[in-house]
Image 1 (tube, rainbow, N blue to C red):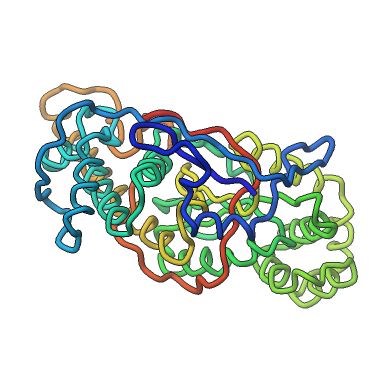
Image 2 (cartoon, rainbow, N blue to C red; image 1 turned 180 degrees about the vertical axis):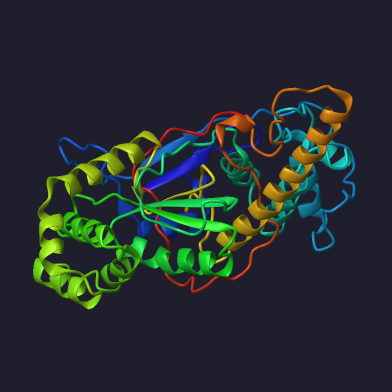
Length: 387
């Protein structure tokens, strides 16, 4: 089990700062397997320390109403916490050296500031301690956007979609099976705005996970990856070779070709490639989910509520960001200024990099069943960079 704690102003530097819900989520996690050579897994509880955020040292003042941010449901204590956070945390926009509150007041200068303020208002409403709220903000709005090469991985959704969700999973991992319906639903709900990319990370603790991954890759060769994935996750306790052949027949594969592709060393090469890529980006357990390059960390965010709000706000921000860039480009053409590319306000990443946005959820909505706890990575990973 791996938990995160936050150290910094107002934080309590002990494991107890992690919420009960986060600890409950950690219990059901599939352990990480970062040592590809020895295939060893550390199962002892570990703690990852998030860095202290960069805060603005200024008088907080009396809480104010910010345009576009509804705080009417906050009580006095929650309002004070929310106002302290938006007054002391820097705006998630690299070109604005001001607090979130001041950024919101600039009226449209940054597409991500209003969503960031809403995000913190929701955290205050939920009763999150300052250390957890600030840590979640760091994860959600960090300039550390991971750039992942999609290569030939299975993709569902258009390449033009503003939101790309990449998930590494293990077919024998219960937490991965739990996550699949949420990811499927979000893509079906936003077919033009979301694409799902699946990568493989079979754990050595699951004896059938590699052969299931080979079967999935063999199905992909015949254009039946998603049909095979569904059967594998629905039958996680029946993944013997004979079972896999049965699923291959059920989805209509050419069995002679399936057997050749299943035994091909190229499948192992793809699996090892995906694992190495995930390790590079900080995976310490499955499922490992990135939304436009930022980790949907299951110790802070819930599949049953936060995923939908994260996605819809991400779509909103990318659209506003595109509109702002278009207006700036027209202005530059008219004045002859600004010959270079206009950086996206919501990312902290140059426009030329191809990375996406840095939104925050505005409100939690129920995206599906949430009674079973999602996974939390079991091994420590690199902490997010300071904003």
